Amino acid sequence: MTKNSYGSVLRQDLSNLSQYIQRHRSEIAAINKPACYDSHFEKMEDRLITIMQATEDASNTIMSTVEEGEKLLAHLVDGMDKAAN
Image (cartoon, rainbow, N blue to C red):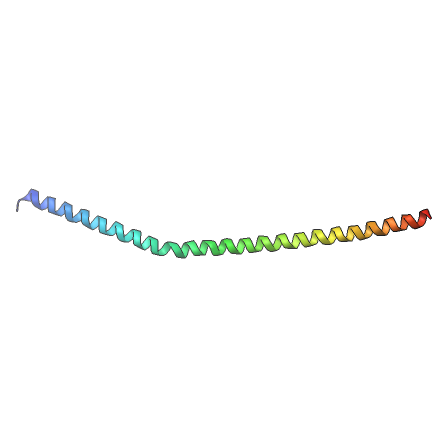
């Protein structure tokens, strides 16, 4: 075998090795991705639950305040009606 043919064989072997490594890197990345992906969604789920709870709390506060305001308004109107009679 000539020096040139050894170089050609070596280049081919290195190319094959490079492809092999790249393929396995991709496979490892694909294996690791779902865990990261799930973790990301778990964090998002926690944030959304917190947002939903805060929204519910705010809505309850607003509704309670409106109901209290309606009671006060009704009491005020009732007092004005009594005063007018």
